[in-house]
Image 1: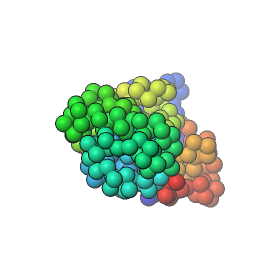
Image 2 (image 1 turned 90 degrees about the vertical axis):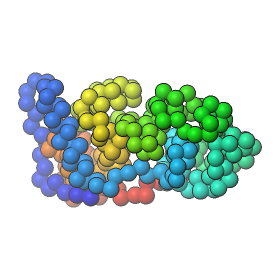
Image 3 (image 1 turned 60 degrees about the horizontal axis):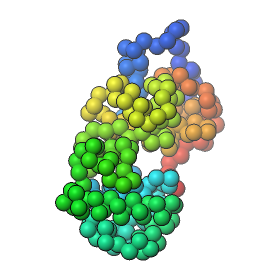
Length: 247
């Protein structure tokens, strides 16, 4: 992961608002730099099929991928199919997922989505956003994770990292995830949506932190209008870089 930008200076922005063309070019250049920085970016939830990814993504709300990956092996061994999970004893299911937090509501959602898959979709995870969001506990973010990583259908996953970075980068001023998704979709080619999501999440976890971004070692420093929100000297910034696991 290339991170060094010793001596980086804040990007000199032209006076007045950035033109639409300039914004598109800057956003795409930043995406290319992220691609070079994180060539191995991928979904950090472990899964073997679309059902497992759907369940893991629902469980990932308000917890870490590391925690979910600790829970899912036993969960999927006990309930390998939607039919099995739909018939689960609620208390047993809650016990298996308790460490992910909010386990009672998550258990209700898992029982509901499993029953929905069984009863409405023949036990198969649907391949459209419109169908996925009809399942309990599944919003646009979860649906896009599943579509992009299980079915290769491009989608933008606006989690807390993605939204924070998109605003810091000056790509959007929106805070509503659906509006952020719409605005970024107009900047970045559709074929890049899923992998962009991973790159943004990886960058947010490793360098562009919420409280103290490691600006002094950020490969995007010269293109970022928020350069300087964190330490700009390389030595201090390098101490802030995280490499995982993200527990």
